[in-house]
Image (cartoon, rainbow over all chains, first blue to last red; front, side, top):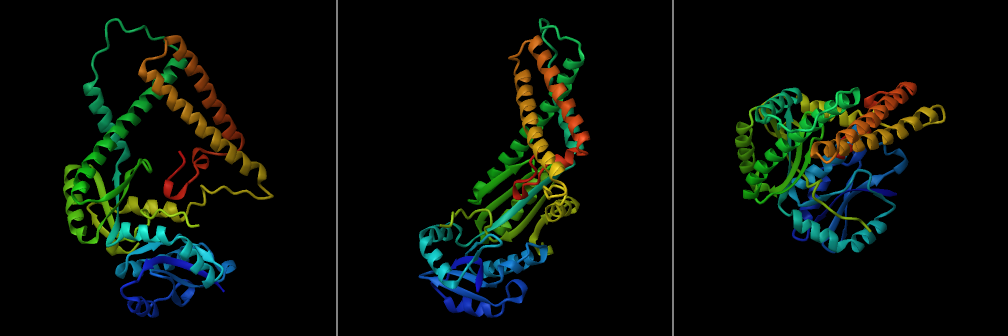
Length: 251
Length: 114
């Protein structure tokens, strides 16, 4: 029977704790969960029929639920949805082949959790504010500036140039917010990843990895930042398993 | 996402819900290729790539105009070329019954292509 892998974890100290936890949990479609180990590294798996596995919302939620429950009690490396292997034997071989990478990644995320920060804005309002600010700072053109042709093509370039400059202003603004955020995060020893302008309204989409005990300090820092940027909407979520901070190319 | 996963939020969660909605229901941005629609599916894929390249060229051109390294004649020629390219793209989109949203593939966690 094929097996779907939910997470990789280390249970060197208390394998009984994991077994007790797995008894009370169910995998996709109510399947039983079990542990497959090689030395100190364990994979949490359940039986699956590959042909029946649909990548739908309910299966994905069940899959994520197992990882979430495990992460509440152990340091885990979440596997990507749909990680299926033919048998218990092939999983053991995979654990053996990737043993050091798993160990290294588990050390990296030990006692840490992931948090997400999304910053939203009213796109039109922010653009209008930035435009107004830039117009205030624009100096008068030089006396000997080259004469600008008046044509339909030049008008088109001017229109595009305006849009380009606004985009640049927006990116500079987003960068300044990121600098402010990283200033606070450095104090919490957080590892962070930022994505700028994910959509027109989601100007920053960030994930942080930090000690789980520092959750309250992070919330406090976000509260301070929100007060500094009343025009933006900060949404902090977590704690999550370290989905964005595990880097393994499984052999 | 369960309610208790939101640790801080002062505004409305509409934007977040909208974004989650897009991720879970991104049918529009999927490339639908099948025996019955091979032409339009392929046109969508090709035009998406052409549009991406066109936008990159346009962006780079605007950087150069803004940098002041081009003469007025060069800007004029650039404007003519890029404007004609834009119009041609509009024609092609119309021909294949596609709009701007159709030409923006959702790359999952990486966001939208354009």
